[in-house]
Image (cartoon, rainbow, N blue to C red; front, side):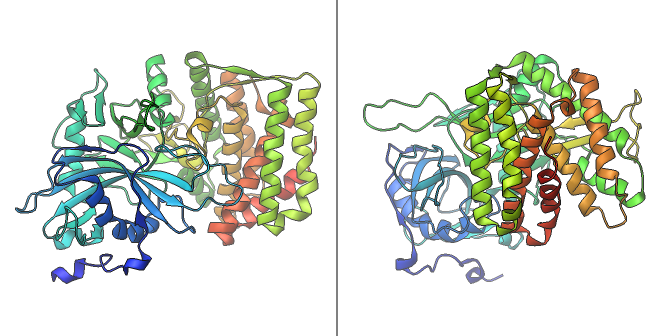
Length: 522
């Protein structure tokens, strides 16, 4: 294939290219500084990234122009030589500067300064070759014009099996390379030579499966602090909880210096986590849809899933800090939910007729706080739904087909909602938030599963899930209807905004829940 076929993205007119702003703090450049110097490197990559980044599924700033970039760190995992056939591998942390969305409270990331434009920090893995083989054409980012990589081809490294294999080798041999630190659990046995393949269905991150044995999840938008998808599974593994795949290895980046005299931040950036890949498992969403299609009962599976959820919640409460929500915290929680409802109603007019009735869910919750009611808050999954659970089974049905007579569920993806700031996702919350998310997921499955689904399918499944949770935890979420209704309403409001923006044809699904919740004042 002619080389010219790979040059798209390099011909941006200069006036359309966001400026490559100098970083607000010292930039870490590791290995071959002359080849990857920060000033020339970022300036040459800026026009390519300005076109390529917004097209990625995991780019969080869609709909807002990129006005500039700042380089936080650049590390050569393989030298980016100007000659020869060996590919180079360049690891970057880059801040993409964009206008602050109206009313948005932006979290800190990569040294984001209060009052500045929004700047999300992204992890990039760039392959560098003299010529891109035709099989890697879909990975193309572009050919820098000028700078230390002038004349070379830059591409998405995760699509190159040779470079994806190098990442696994780095994780097999813990150590430090500049700001990057690779760590491994002492008991983990990670073989070499596992063939990699990139999952193509990711949304907020990227995942590579190695030989159906391990899966490496790479966080694309990163912030200072331990990512919950490392912190929580690691803590659960140390308690002996087997419901969550235990991390085998991970890597992180030392935080940038905040400025003269400020000293380094103490929290590193979690960049990726390697965990066992549960080959042969099926996610709960597909299982639920299959049950709806075939007319099979799903209540037994839902009951087992409720038990699994409770076991994970109990394990997290035993090993991680908990707190008590009293009147000030409960009133604040209700106020935040009310604010989200008001913002959602302003964005989606379909919510207007139900706004007053929905507010009563939050008012009832706040009233209980004023009356002296308290609730325990703890670490939770944060984004629990049927797509975040896997059933391990040798059989093909949805009932008791696992040794011991119980469906074996595992919970995965403890990152929480990536759109929320990291410190918020790591904050203790009522466990009912996870329960509400799963209940909403049952409603989604019933709506998507076809018009022939039994009218009481969602209700029976929800009841079975809550009963399983109560059996394992001793606490039935239905016994505190005000708390459950408030969280389920908050989740449905979020879903309305999401569907209106991204999948308008799905908007009737959460709107059906909105009508039910608006009429269900306890």
